[in-house]
Structure formats: structure tokens, C-alpha cells
Amino acid sequence: MENREFNNLVEQYSEPLYWHIRSLVNSHEDTDDILQEVYMKVWKALPSFRGESSVSTWLWRIATNEALSFLRKKKVRAALSFKSIDSEAERVIDGDPYFNGDAAQRKLAKAIAKLPDKQRAVFCMRYFEELGYEEISEITGTSAGALKASYHLAQEKVKKEIEA
Amino acid sequence: MNKKLNYSVPDGYFENLKGRLRSIADTQQEAPSRLQRFTPYLALAACFAIAVLAGSLILKRTAVPAASDEEIIEYLIDSDMTLAQIEDYLTLNE
Image (cartoon, rainbow over all chains, first blue to last red; front, side, top):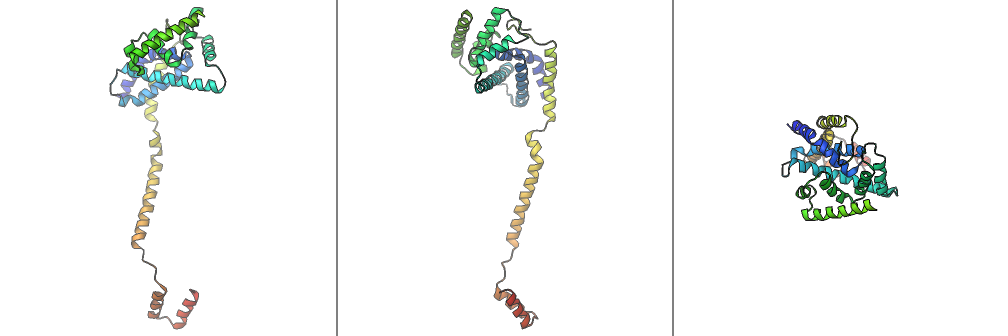
């Protein structure tokens, strides 16, 4: 039974979850690793999932936390090796063979990559995935009001960065 | 390909990904948990602890206090030993 449920989750959600994680971490390889971790956690937690939130909210919460944890570790590693995390993100975008955008879109991707991690998560869920504030609130555990403020602030930063 | 994100993935990636993710369930079912791996060792340690505890309890309940010198001499006198032999015993145990 659990096997079938798990396979359904793979079938139904692995692709949208991939894009959700990719929007946060940019790199295809990192996304692939994180997605594996996410599904490992899903498999372990599936028997205790009581349906207090919808399956998709539960999955997005696990994936967001996993991606944010990955970014936190990456930031620590960069700090320890005296590298700038912003230039590292730019390098990933510039060297990504799977980036198909033009120069303006590349600039946008870099501007988004410069946002603080949590703000970027909110921005990406709203901008790319077009999730509602209530939905994002359930995923992140932040109030809808705070999310609106965060999104507005992120928009301003991105705009400023593109115009610079 | 995700148009708004302007990213793409290698050809056939999602088909391959689904297969890999589905196999998580199989490998996780087969792999014993850390507790399962240590169970035989834990059982062995528990058996050893029980044996030591039981042994010490049995010894504590059945052990007779050691006899005093006077009691031993009384015993030797009551036995068929000669005085010389008893003296030898006392000399040896001085």
C-alpha cells in the first residue's frame, strides 16, 4: 500500500518539485541531489503523514526546507573558503548548459539568486509557481501579511538589480 | 523545459528520475535500520548482563560465611587427626 502511495507521489509530483527546487538552487545537479533527499524523507515520513495539510503542501514544505538547508550549508562552505556566495551563484548561472534564456533573462536569474534565501523562496513560489499567499504561508509557516511584505521587498530588490 | 524559468534538463531526465525515485522504496525496504543492525549485539550484551546479575545473586544467597580459626581447630580435633597433624596445620596457617 505504502509502495503504491509513494510511487503515486513520484509520478505526480517529482517534476513540479524538481522545478520548485531548481528555482531555488539553480544548478541541475544540486536539484537532482536535493530531490533524492526529499523523496527519501517522504518515504520515511509517509507512514506518519496524517493529512493535516494537503499532500502537495506537505511535499513543498519538505522540499523548501531541504533546499534552504542545502543553501545554508553552501553559504557556510563558501564563507570558510573565503568565496562570495553571490559570485558563486553567478558562476553557476553563467556556466549552466541548461539555461536557455537571453541576456535579460540571465540578468533576472542572477538578480533573483542574489536575494536572501528565504526571500528568494517566497519570490520564486509566487513569481514562478504562482502560488497564493495562503498556500505559501502553509508551506513556510509565515503569515500571509509577512509574505506579502517579503515579496514586495524582493520585487524592489530584483528591479533595482536589473536596472543597475 | 520550464519556459518561465528558462531552464531545461538533459534528454530523458524525468523518465530516468522517476525510475530512480521509485527505487528508493525498494532499497529502503531492504536496508535494515540502524537498530535492526545492532539488535544481535544488543541481545548478546543483554544476555551477558543477565548472566552476571543472576550469578552474583545466586552467590550472594548461597555463600556461607568463612569459618573462624577456632571452628576449624574444633573440627580438626573432632576428626581423627593426630595432635602433630593439627600442630602442622596451625604452623602452616600462621
